[in-house]
Image 1: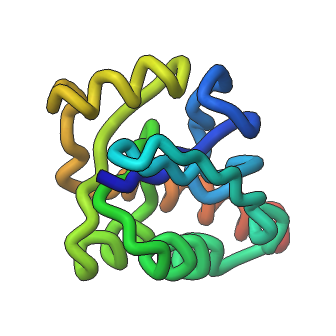
Image 2: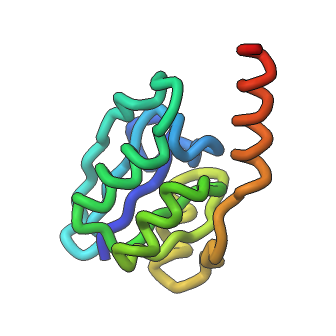
Length: 128
């Protein structure tokens, strides 16, 4: 199983970043091969369309599952289209990896639309 986790740091001792598309890095773990790649999130400072870009980058990595605190509608739709399971995790990454191995992480079945809509509306008000 190959998974991606939104991370605050670059190792499994880091915490899961609560902002999926604006996290500092994505950890790509292949559980069977016991490999870890830290992929810097170079899109985190973009003003818009981050969910689409991040969703596409991750879906191109041959990923089976994503672990995140929550996820916006655009990235969620891309993952759903590519058959990538999205699971809820928080806290230390290593703990979440152990939980997903045993099927103990709850699956996220819909995007966190309210949070991302509120952020977008707040940003629009500031710009006007």
